[in-house]
Image (cartoon, rainbow, N blue to C red; front, side, top):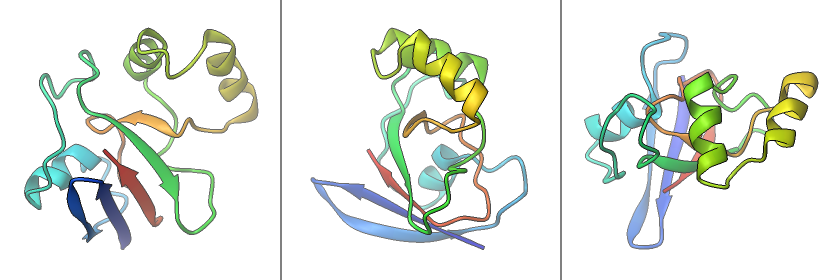
Length: 115
């Protein structure tokens, strides 16, 4: 089980439990199931509307696994990542704090999602 804490200055923080390892449960899906108001449009990683900041709460650096190609492209377009940072992540195997909620698969880790 993973604890996912959703935080937004306009709403009270909410922590939900997620089944890890299903490889189908994204942060956006989890938010929608728990009535957490994350903005979204396409749900396919192409619009960038569901941009979130994900931080590990148990000091692991996994944070939902590697970025998808769609995510990399959108995060560069949104100026949240540089092409150099994308290349460095590939070499160092470190994820970005900035993610698309529709692309991040929940893992067995406690994370803070700021939206």
